[in-house]
Amino acid sequence: MEEAGNMTLKDGTESTAGVEAGRQSNNERNREDEIDSDGVMHDEHDLTLEKTNHSTKSIAETLSLPREALFVAVVCSAQFTTQAALGQTLAILHIIGDSFHLSNPGELSWLIAGYSLTVGSFILVAGRLGDMFGYKRMLIIGYCWFAIWSIVAGLAVYSNHVLFVFARVLQGIGPSLTMTNGLALLGATYAPGRRKNMVFSFFGATAPGGSIVGAVFASLFSMAWWPWAFWSFGIAMAGIAAVAVVVVPDPPRKANVAMKTLHEKIIDLDIPGAVVGITALVVFNFAWNQAPLVGWQQPYVYVLLIVGILLVPLFFFIELRIVPDPLIPFHALSRDVSFVLGCIACGWGCFGALASVCTGWLLGHLRPSWVMTIALSCFTIGAILCATAPPGQSYWAQTFVCLVIMPWGMDMSFPAATVILSNSVERHHQGIAASLINTVVNYSISLALGFAGTIETQINNGGTTKADTLKGYRGAFYMAIGLAGLGVCLSLSYVFVQFRDDMKEKKEDDEKA
Image (cartoon, rainbow, N blue to C red; front, side, top):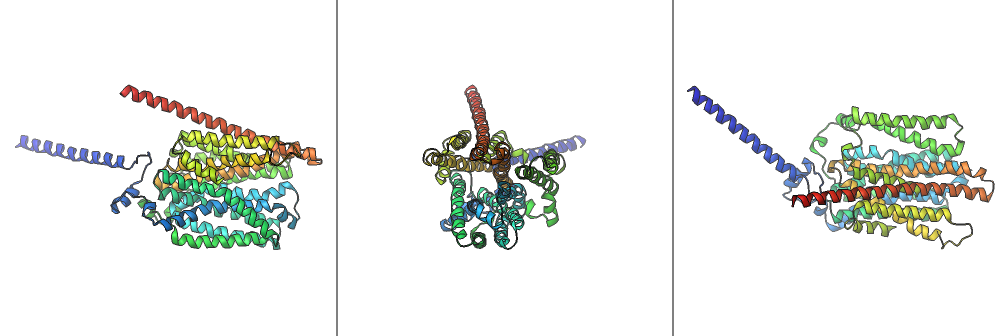
């Protein structure tokens, strides 16, 4: 009897072990199914949704063609309007300055830099908000916020330039929400492949058009009264928000996120990391953009610079050691992603629809490292042409060529980087992936303005003569050449690393064969 019992126990144990082994095998197979042919991880909720629909179709494939076209147009409007808001102020900068009795270049730069500062600084938080509360909801809120503060910027004509700068700073929060969550919507809606590459390229292609349209309409409105440039822009933002309510799909969030209470979502926003990170970005940027205006001899300028530098390691300590769900998914920051972010920062710091569309095709035929190298080379060549153009030379000799070449750098690097990062992270992290690219782009624009302004004011001998003024301008362009050249070095290193990895994989395959 005892022997029989032992046999029963043994059989039962073996049976249990067999069941457990079967479960593990099934789990492994399911895990493999979560990774598509492009190496992109899909979370459990995405797979559940697909099984429920008895289809492996992406969300985009379930949309009718007219709705998909409107959806892409609304999302691309996020990039279009972001650049339009920058271009409209740049085109009529001196008209706005005259109405506020401003002529100092350092003061005028804040009318632009304040906007880019908040666009770049708040994007990381905007991505997390989308991950927590839904990309569609945050996209609509972003357009509405954009509309409100555009109107306030126009109303500043009845006050002073302080209100205008304040409105522009808060206006920048709007595009930080729209661009980040718009890109996240594209990443969550489209499966990796050629169609996704082209949609992301269309998103990047709207940037030059936005700058031109914003500048043209602002110039036209300024012939009557410049505030109408901002009021009409606000009305347009409200209209886009209304269309977004109807045509934009709402991708499902992970089950564990959707079921969380508001209090739990607020905790997951990583408020300590957000406060420290944004503060570091803002004070560091403020110091560099304020220095050309008041000079580095002012104590508060270099104190803020030091504070910004010291807050950076504190931010990483909070993200890596304290919070359970950091703002930046460090596990997604692979070597390739790090190279891409570095190239983007150098290129956009120095600163074609056709270029963006070509990028979608190139990504299907070339490694990302080569696409980034071509883009950074265009940045470098364009900066060299601008820096060396002599006074009195024909516009068509160098300046025109520069304006033809440099957009290829901007409009190839941005869509390439967004596609690479989108394919590198899980679907529920699309908001953060979009945030990283946009943070680097917009923050580098704002910060590089401060660098250029500091160099220009330090070497122009007061700008009392035309020769001194030209000397200051050339100094700023030489800095741009240096940044773009650094980007070329990074991209070439990226090419070398990918080539070495390819050769290593080929050698391993040959050994296995």
